[in-house]
Image (cartoon, helix red, strand yellow):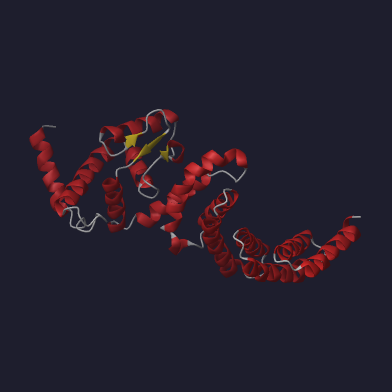
Length: 294
């Protein structure tokens, strides 16, 4: 393709774009620059899609996560070589920047914004966000300390995808990814961020499963723990009393989860200096365990 032919195609794509006027969040950027980025992306995508559809799909996944340090493991491929070939193609078009010595790449801010705008206008953003959440769930580890470096790398991408998919909080994949993110944030001592996701999971479980479902009560207990770790004892006690009462009613007074709730409440009482109440609960737990476990 000659320079003249490329210019003609670029002009055609620029004229076809009527949605890029509010593309950039940076109000200082001129509209002409934003249109040029959008038009160049549109032209590049049309060329890429003709030769490597997988590469084009990778861009749509990249649009649904944080634009920096996107791991190659997040991208589906028939083989590792197929994945490498697709990313190399995107790198040649300067749509992504491969990180030297790392299995990851970055996307320029304007390209990322333009991709999201394109998907939104075409009505495809929700679909690709849901697909990306499924991919994140596939590679996101549990909160064991041995996985710390992996989850810290994936967390910005999971948080980005979750924050743009609030309308679909009933979907089980989204709920499970939010739970795993909350667990890892909790393990990392990032209590406030963990709290936000735990509340989302808890409210969804209440709505979908009911207020006395064991999974709902687990979410409430997790929320109480985040309150405790922030020194918010009053809120922690209120939540723990609810959990303990419902577990007694649903599971029985001798169930292990009920005894754990009683122990948690006792620990919070101790942190508040409510020694007598803490002692009473501790004795109840001990006597019940003796009777049940021997």
